[in-house]
Image 1 (tube, rainbow, N blue to C red):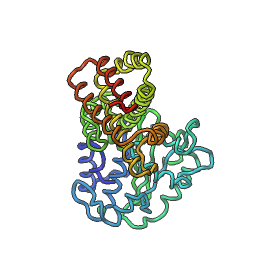
Image 2 (tube, rainbow, N blue to C red):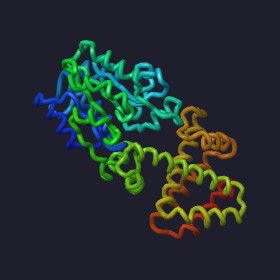
Image 3 (tube, rainbow, N blue to C red):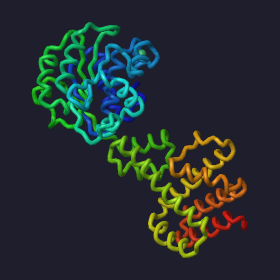
Image 4 (tube, helix red, strand yellow):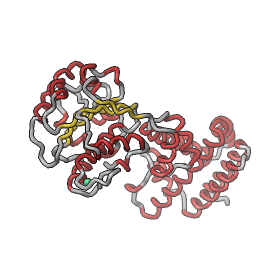
Length: 371
Ligand SMILES: [Zn+2]
């Protein structure tokens, strides 16, 4: 992972690269930052920069032999330690799961990690056996690079076992760097803290999250703004919120489509008054955006018949598959045209109740091929 792949945190990136450029790398550092701030991502990018064979001054090259290995989490001189579940389990046993999880999301939190391990109701730990394994690993010579680096994710989970690492951190073997990636300084042994240099990492700003959501997740500016405000500097949380919003929209949309298909006037009025009027203009825009997404996916499905490519969740995908038998292309194109019009009117402050009731009636007519 290069620094350029880490969201924001420009000041910290600069400080970190300068430490390396000036050959002043502390042998033990704590990357202290709240959830979703990117502290783990920064530690990985830092390790990659330290070991890069062709440093670019502000970032690793991303192409040399060493960068490629760090990027794939297979560099023999970069070790990871993280909470696991069970007394005899050590990080090495879960390397495959760890690589996949961090590659997918370097902003993951502890609950997501424990869920990956199928242990979301259990407490994670960095165990005594893990500490012994660390001591053993770091007593080896470096394989390829100038340094061997140990990244401990969430040293909070060391508890008292942390004492076993004290001597190692105080008098580290030659060319060894400790990067402790922590969220809560109060849960780390003072004796460890006093031996580390603290790298303070601030929560991400709303602007940094908004920009990333727009660029990486193709969110509209309004939606990105709303999500970022709720995420409170936690990028990982912002991504979870997008999924949650999608789920809400999908549920509401399917309900709406079923009511329109049946065409019961009372249900249509109730749905419009009780559901759609309450979600406000922004919510209505999101609902219509979801409807357009669903219809586009539906068209692709009807054209190719390939269910595996559907970008819909199980329940919605099932509905789409069932609908292919009753809906023709012509009808779907009319629905999309209608949804585009509705979006336009919502943006221009149309009365939601009237607009959506009218749209529901038109949708019913399209379903029944009356238009
Ligand atoms: Zn490189």
